[in-house]
Length: 83
Image (cartoon, rainbow, N blue to C red; front, side):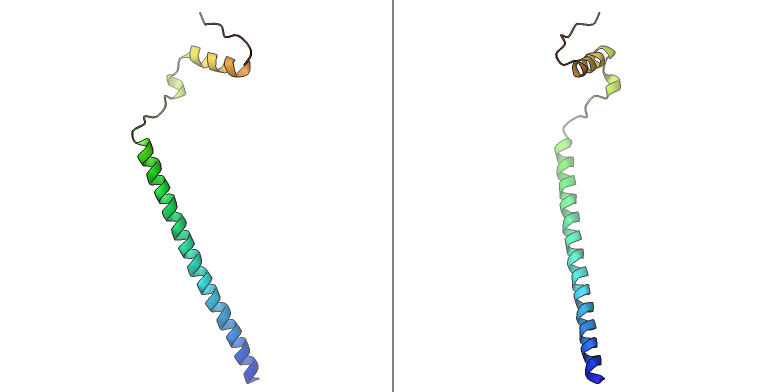
């Protein structure tokens, strides 16, 4: 019975150590992913600082919105100017 307990104890110890090692490796992977995301967000912020945001749709005139819709709905139709 003593040798059986020794084998089971060794197997359980090996499994526990491997689970702890896997958890530590996973934590390092998560930390690496988070640092990459942080760097990407910094780059995005740096690239968009000088660019003003696009005009909202409410700032566009009714005529330009109608032309845009007409152009998408009927791409082959000639565009007539609005009066």
